Image (cartoon, rainbow, N blue to C red; front, top):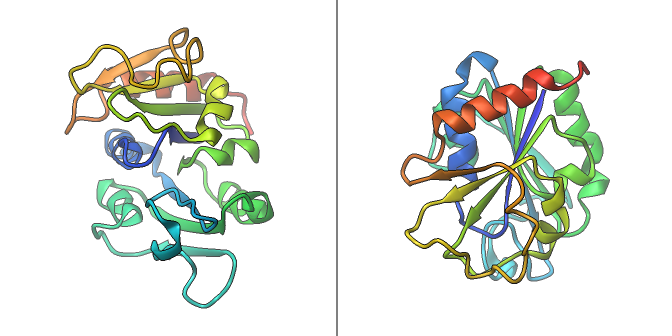
Length: 206
């Protein structure tokens, strides 16, 4: 089974949602994967990607590394939450399709995979695709807008405002599907867990 968690911008809580799902569904013995696209002044993690530090150190274009320590890195947080294995895939911006083989290899080797990414849904079809929305964050990535219609549901971060700053950007794309209001530091509620479980149960066998 494949669960994907994306978001409309950087630092809206995607990693916290992934970690929360792993923690509350440890029995699934997750393999976790974080995908970062870097370069061309675009980075999934930072503003100003030229110095973001996401580029593979050895000069390769692509790098898939496995995390072994329960550290403060995103992939380390997934292990700390209870993932069986945790990986970080780095690819140049716009070149993720060329790394599709690496993604599919992880899927083939694992029964339950959870991925932090938007663009991965252009390579594979998830059983559940959640998108994280933060109404106080005005930034809206073009890739997120393009893939918003594919989301099964939305995790909305409760920041105390009722209408998004980007409402005109994505009007009609997010308000007709299931939405789950969560308040940090609790990014995953019982309702979110039940929604994911139901989606996984309804998915056809792979």
